[in-house]
Length: 348
Image (cartoon, rainbow, N blue to C red; front, side):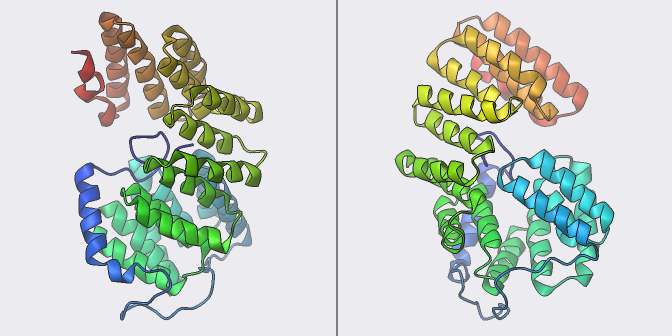
């Protein structure tokens, strides 16, 4: 499943183009401290290989780790369930709260989790304090503070594969794909079978249109997680972007063999048929995907894609009617990002 930005579907810290430009400027301004394993003058000394996890509950710690594994395969809703349960077991579990901030969709929940993380960070290790500062500052739009915290954290734990993965994924979300590759490669040097890093590396390369280099990483991802649907979904998506649509369809179908309710793959089969010019078949596949959607946003996106198939057939009137239904539903759900006229701008 795709990880970032508007080019691909998926969950992440998507940012506007102007924001990504700001991030790039800030990264350049602080580039000397971005070198992994090299301390800046103000950075803490290197300690252990892995960032500690502070919690009073062994059960909460187990739930947290289970959530991380689900997150690596982009089963975000399931991961959030684990982290919420962990926070119930230990209400002062800073890292559980911070991952809810990082991956949450509900603004009210994210806001509450950020406050809980701030409070809980008073009683955690220095590294965890930096993690909280990094994520909360990003969420608040304080990017210079976030970058400084990330740099100090990476200097403290340069050989933590998970943190290298997170740093790479964060830079990817800001459009710095070369920086993302640098961190993600380090994660894979530490742990060559790190499933999440293999997936991220594939997307990093794909964002740079290096599809032939991306595919082997995604095949390694399938080998690392042979019973999970997401690796096949990721490979299928990159093949789709490379224009290899029949191969893409085959991989999406492999994903559905492993999980018959995997929304991302079912919806993307519709995308493949739309690109192949079979708009009627595309609508059939979107109709199958709709009840699988995990969030209202997924449902609306599926409806939008289905509406676009009518425009591809030059049936602009029907396309407008379908998009009007999406607008009404988005208004009812107060999902402002789907209420913009831009969703139908090409139809006018």
